[in-house]
Image (cartoon, one colour):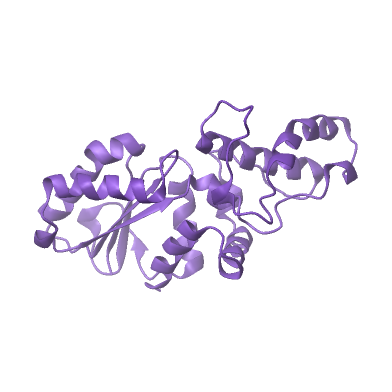
Length: 243
């Protein structure tokens, strides 16, 4: 099977996904671009943000597949819902495709997966990330100072027992839901790092913690043991169907 992955993300998930594909046992091997496709290959490309993806990146990718003599079985589009619902974001992409193409004339399938609401939302679902009560942790000055910074997240929403996809923004916050989820995960990793619980920190440019197989296993345990992270489970089930 040959897959063309088109991701909204240009920083973190585009680095994370190849590692996840290895952990899942995805059959295909990554190649640089469509000219290198033979058998059981996949291509990974960034759409450079949701607006860019649905206004030109999507069309350019579909045209590339149509005009190539290489066989692509599935175009897999992955993007964030951000402030939209998953259904609204999917509909947005489907309508954009329908405006320009007759699906009956395409010789490849188009699969659309929407992360509810961003990649950090999925990452927050990893089991055993939520720390012990802040009051019971060490009192080193830099750690104690940061614990005050993190406690707003800590007391707002317990991501260990509640679905991260359902986490709203605190009333006092003016940022978007996606930015809040990013800050929660970034600060959670830093809090655990300072407390000695986690060996890695997280940034968009260095998402190493999410590229670790143990971290990935914790996510898989969450989606199969609970009803949480439905948008992640949908994506993982698709990948596993091709292993």
